[in-house]
Length: 84
Image (cartoon, rainbow, N blue to C red; front, side, top):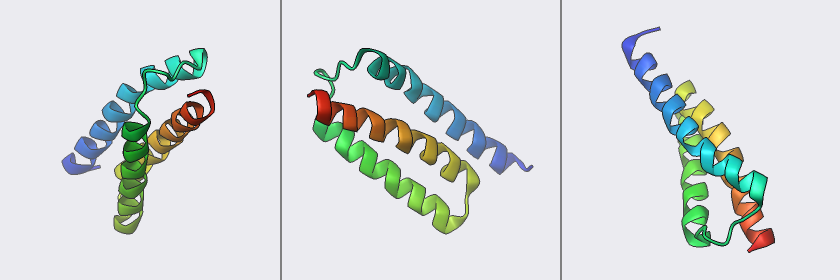
């Protein structure tokens, strides 16, 4: 594995892990009142586009990070829709 791949996987790991505390808290409490629907909608769309971009480039760090983040962001967005 070259330096570029190590940097890519490291960036993917850190940004995905940084998202986990909010996802875990939201899943546990179901409290979404303070979460912006607009922000999460745009964020989820952006993550989906990053995933598509990664697939087109066949870039595994981008693909893996965005598959995980998209699942978490979509879950939170659906909870926001359900619980307001």
